[in-house]
Image 1: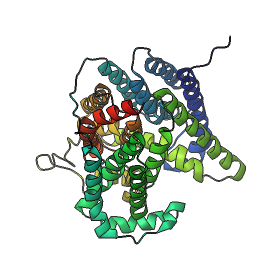
Image 2 (image 1 turned 60 degrees about the horizontal axis):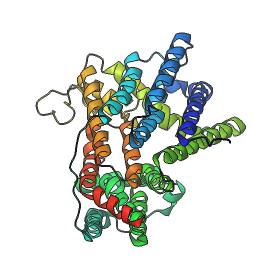
Image 3 (image 1 turned 90 degrees about the horizontal axis):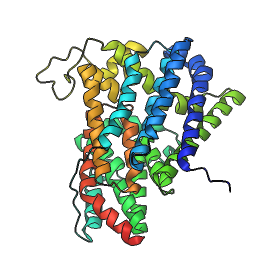
Image 4 (image 1 turned 120 degrees about the vertical axis):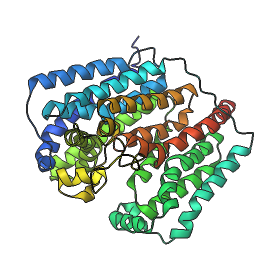
Length: 421
């Protein structure tokens, strides 16, 4: 009898294929086309072997049979979007060794902390109250946008046209409420509303949440909002963490292949540039630049919460400083992820602090048995951690709000889902 190959084995095969594909993509596309922006290529056999061995060890660690399916899925996403691109850039560029081992440490600590017996008490909203709370909260947070923008919408944005014009207009019209509420709504509150509609089988909530998200996309043209809605709906078509990861990997593989075919056959760089370069390798290159610029020149959060007690030595925010220094334009907004953010602020100890905080947050979601339908939201926040500072993700992007809402709504969502089964 032929045994069916498990999804875990399929995922291992796929991630290995993606690793090889990304090496090809970097050497045949990213480096030759975008060398002017800093993507170098130097063949170093020792570094290629070192990164390849580290890839195998990390993959083996993630597949350790005693870790939970949730922790496995989180690690696989970090591995694909953060770790592997850094391993590959280290192969071909003179990037600091500490970067790749920091990502290995991130995987290691997430797994080790997940095995600790830490209990987090979760709370349950009273029966029938959760729907009212979600609807009222959604309306209150949407109200400043209705007042500010009304329904004068540019539907060309749905065709990915006029993106930058609409975004520029939105930035000019923002106020303190719309600045914070935008991410809180699009990344947390509306996804909760959609998930509630899916689990409860209430199409009204699903429709309201989806159309409200599209409204936010139309008024500010942030592609991540549209992408987030698609991922929330798409990944929840698949039951089980192994299947969700498999579906994600297949999608990424198809995008790689399509992008490279368009480039090879039509000499069109747009698809591969937006996907392979922008999503995977640009945040990796920025890691390198932040380590280079802030070596022995740490900020100690003087640009952020400690600005009143620590002197900030620059005239612009760090992302603009890096953009001007390495890309010759401050407008680039060269944001960094959790590893280089930790290094920029506190050096090597900052890296460890950020990794510990992220590991504990992931442990929290594991401990409260986060509803599987909410996992795509976790994916979006992991995605944010690749290109945003930890404090920014916690406060501005809404991760702290997601922690709070999970604390109060997750238990009820699990109960509803159990009853529906």
